[in-house]
Amino acid sequence: MAGGGYLQSLFESPYIIELPTPKQSGDDFEARLEVFAARYRRILDEGAAVSIPDNPMGNVYFTALEVMDFLDLPVDPDRTLLHLNSFHLKADLESFLGGAADRGVKNLLVVSGHGGPRLPRLEPSDVGIEAKTVTSNVLLRYIEREYPDTFTCGVGFNQFEPAEHERQRLERKIDAGAEFVITQPVIGEDPVIMSLAEIRIPVFIGAWMSKRIELLMECVGVEPTADMEYDPVENLKLLHRTYPDFGLYLALLSFKREWSDLLTRNLPDRTGS
Image (cartoon, rainbow, N blue to C red):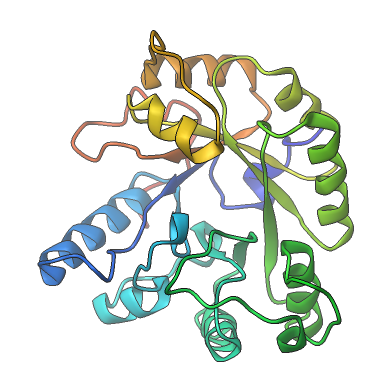
């Protein structure tokens, strides 16, 4: 069964908390940097792992490494997860991978990503292959070839896609070198998510921590119903009960409240963070 070893083998925590860097288009950059730094330190102090996306939804954000360097933030190799997608110039890809390796970052989430008018996409020739596009599988194989034994790479899983097709895609990702998987946010009991207990790598399931369920539905391409109600805290409690062997990936978690009633699984000693 997947999951049993994730506390020892990945992140040293059952919780990963997502924390985007500031958008490049935003105002009051210095204030937003201070907020990012405070939230970054709080995640580590709470004993969780911090996950920093790579230009989510095709919007342009400052990169994780440049923000962490500017703020002189500590890098916890075991509790830092950086995302990498295929919408980069070759030079930026190499700068990211080389910089992450130099700083001791171990864990990457490799995804195809969302494009946009300001985001160039890697060309297959950039990574030494002949193909139409650079997929997450291509990136996984490139990272292992160019940076052997340097990173532990994970991939995404979208349970909102046709189940058989998505499972086949996941198997191909595992064959390409994926060592853990993070799902899209899970709402209650889901037989597709349950079936991931059969795979041979650790699983972290998404937990949508905003009441705005329509945003999630928009992200995954599902039409919300007019009467749809959602309580993120109650859903998280249900995920804890239903999937005890999986880790949890918390997105849009509020930093304005205490987390003691949310992060209820055993966490590492926080005194040294």
